[in-house]
Amino acid sequence: MTREFYGATIQAQRAINGLLNLPASGREQDWEIELADPDRVEEMLEAAVDSNLDYDERCALALLTIASIEELFELGEVSPAIVEQARSTIRQYHDVHEAMVFYWIEQRQASNEENVREVLFG
Image (tube, rainbow, N blue to C red; front, side, top):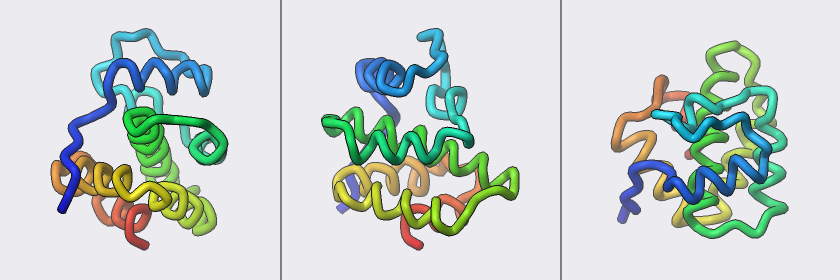
């Protein structure tokens, strides 16, 4: 069964903005895409492991991480190690993984589904 998920809550966005000190204005239409930063993927993955986040915050951070990795793929700069680390981190929380599958794959939010499938499934 897939967990339905339609995007990060405002509260979760604010929490992740603060955790990562993101340059958010609060008016982002597509928060995870507008604030994606391929240079900060490792920091995002560390925050996912080191932080005491709730479900909504973990989902918001996973969204941001996957959007940032999509940019790495587009730039041709993604490493297998980063993809494996992201996959492992997201899969630590089954409910978050299922939410990401629903959002990125089932809701067709990925700009390149094959790349996102690589992150989520390997």
